[in-house]
Amino acid sequence: MAEAAHLRLGVNIDHVATLRNARGGAGPDPVRAALLSQNAGADGITLHLREDRRHIRDSDVDAVMAAVKIPVNLEMAATAEMQRIALAHRPHAVCLVPERREERTTEGGLNVTDDNSRLRDYIAPLRAAGSRVSLFIAPDETQVEAAARVGAQVIELHVGAYAEYCAEGNDAARDAELRRLFAAAALGKELGLEIHAGHGLDFVNVGPIAAIPEVVELNIGHFLIGEAVFVGLEAAIREMRRQMNLARM
Image (cartoon, rainbow, N blue to C red; front, side):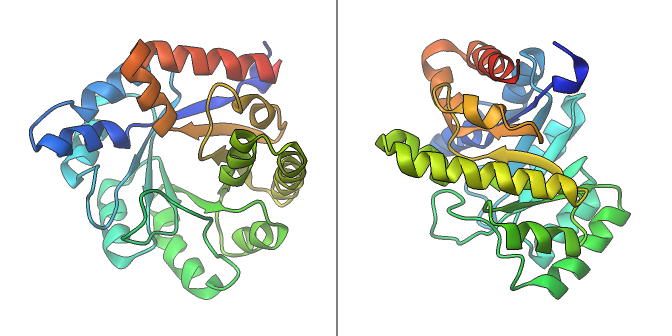
């Protein structure tokens, strides 16, 4: 496969920390998960530091960044506290996501169009510190255009609706959402943005997203950690990589 066709895989290890926190002990260790992911061929590690610290803790960010040789992507809400943490750690990438304390997972994309001036000011110091800034947005062309205006270098397209339509067997809605994703990715690249995608991807539905030519990185977490219960984390990651490569070819 040509180098230009390589599609990066970022592995989100949040839910290893969820399992650890369920008992309040030291294991399973997110650092071990990060190292296993690296050895299995992951191109990056994603950590979502939530305001209530429900899974990843501040100490996990320190430990993972010290342990792995691949880039670390810090997902976080656009709050003053999270900005301070990101500026102190200077991860390779920062992905800004919407966050509500009561939600179990990130339920939608960031509303960039309604928060232009604040996000522009928020992003600038992160970029100055050397982190690449990504915005997690719905595949909506107005949001893509707003992301370019506020100074993001990357957008991560929220593919959760697509994944839900796949699970429901709603082919018409799935295909319509795929068209939105293709259009948003094409527009983003035209505007000079790097295109990532994530949320709800698994072995069955990843192919069409991996085949979007402008997408250069997929970030996948919950499914891989769940699959690891049955086959092990390295085997789950290697199979995801295989499915991505097949789609890319």
